[in-house]
Length: 117
Image (cartoon, rainbow, N blue to C red; front, side, top):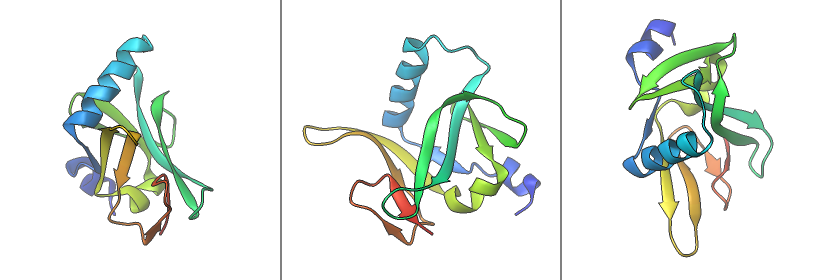
C-alpha cells in the first residue's frame, strides 16, 4: 500500500466514547501539542500480537495522520495489521477500557487486547 493511499485514507477510526476518554487523558497528563496518539502492534500476548495505544512523540519511522483533532502516529509497517480498525471506550460494570475491533485479526484472545493475523 502506498503512502499516498494511507495519507488519503484514515487508517483507523475512533468512536465518540474513545475520543472523549483520549481527550480526558491528554488533558489530565498535561501533554503538549507535540504528543500524538501512538497506535501500533508488538509481538506478544495470548494470540501473537498485542495492541499499542498511548500518547507519544513522533519518531522517525512514523506516518502521521489527523483524526478527529488528534495527531495519530503509526509505523508504516503496522498499517497492514491495523487498517480499518475501530477503537472504542467501554465503561461498564464488568468491563472498562479501550476495545479494538480489527477486521484484520484472524483470532483474538478472550481479553480482546491481542490477536493473530
